[in-house]
Image (tube, rainbow, N blue to C red):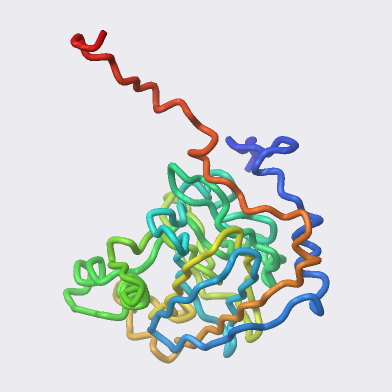
Length: 284
């Protein structure tokens, strides 16, 4: 297959021109970071947490392969949240080190930058699968009911809904996800497929928080996706479900020297979408 140029390309000094030297500095000096929080998310559940701007967080496969569905919001304004489709266009359908996860309009700025990925060398497998998926989205009880006729309350959508409820958010705030550690692609019929997760114990994906964040993660009820979830061979995959770990680190001030939080796009664009208020006839 011949490569075709990407629609969106980085130019020097643009928002897509990542300062790789800075993000390498974040990862290459482990003695310049301090672990401030760590916790485990049990199987088939979800949990939310906050990350201050300039901190780093990791998602870790602490007991073996397991897929996690990640949502991210602006901690102070949940209307700003991860925009998976624009991230696919600006970065890739499967993300890795130095890729950024972008927020929705009218904010359109990087929420996080991926600073380290233990699976960065996975590449493309023999089926066309890649890891850390933005092609698909979370499993949900509505599709599950449609395909199986059964109610199931522990789909990723439901796990995330429960996880963010303490923050005053609802399922209307849950959005398209980054499927961490998930291996996916498109088959010969241009249909979405999921493969068994290639992660091993101790694999991780690490993010640098560009702004203050609220995050939520679901440990997918499909586990490592090695068991068919629908169709004639489907069965309950609970035996291949495993917990995930989250670690949050504070960076030394010296590491952050020169870094600034990205500004939202609406501060730069003043076009008002081509709309102008007309002066009423009675105003002189």
